Image (cartoon, rainbow, N blue to C red; front, side):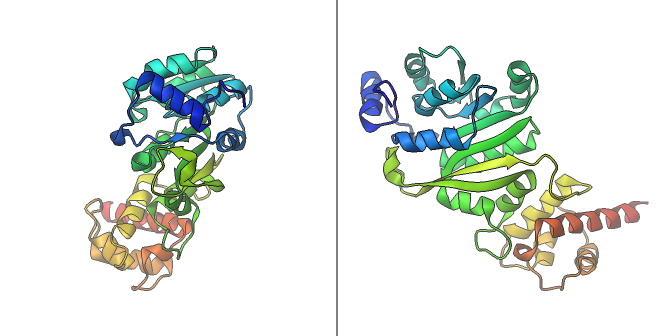
Amino acid sequence: MSKKYLANPTNTLAVINKYGFAFQKKFGQNFLIDENIVAKIVREAGVTKDDFVLEIGPGIGTMTQLLCENAREVAAVEIDKKLIPILEDTLSEYDNVTVINEDILKVDIASLAADRNGGRPIKVVANLPYYITTPIIMGLFESHAPVDSITVMVQREVADRMQTGPGSKDYGALSLAVQYYARPEIVANVPPECFLPRPSVGSAVIRLVKHMVNPVAVRDEALMFKLIRASFNQRRKTLANGLNNSSELNLSKQVITQSIEELGKGAAVRGETLTLAEFARLSDIIDSRCLRRSI
């Protein structure tokens, strides 16, 4: 990379010093300073000149520069207004980028895709603030906006949770939710020294390729996720107790017990042992029982 690129300590510090930028802890800001990692993220995202890319948290524009050179168009959503003049400077030579000063959780991504990409699926690329990783990823999925893939830098522990299966200590509601919507694959491990400032934890790049068709069919998606959340809210309890104690569910003990039996599981089964397919089937069983009782 030439000197104009920001993905190294010298150029990043030069920009920070030029603007007197102070890192904001509340925004979880850690800028990438390794050109190989930046290039790998863009490469693993499969960005081409046909793509409209949504970048979340561009920072000073380190990865945005490379995205602009590989994509047809980039929309970079940055919450920190103090970074906007910096981005106007570092991205000044690119005419295919729009910087949006907004909280990504408040952005209508479906409208953005409709306006800029004719409603076709977009690619999301991000170096996510670790404190808000899960709400951002789940917001992208649950909005049902047209997303082709999400390639993001996250805390290593969170990446492990996204791709693990039943029986693992990392297995939980996030694992099931991500795997319901997408196929997760960790594509790179990233040590703390690749960032400025250095985080206290290891990081990983994970690619989530959206399923064309969800891997399991379920009648009531919202009910299934209520069951999943309830079963992991109290991991040490049995599945029956977890469902019974949930404030989200209004199920009788009889419905819970009989439904678990119909699933073919014993009374002592824990939620952490159930697969996504089993949660979908349990949801349908409970849905049928509640429907019969209401008729």
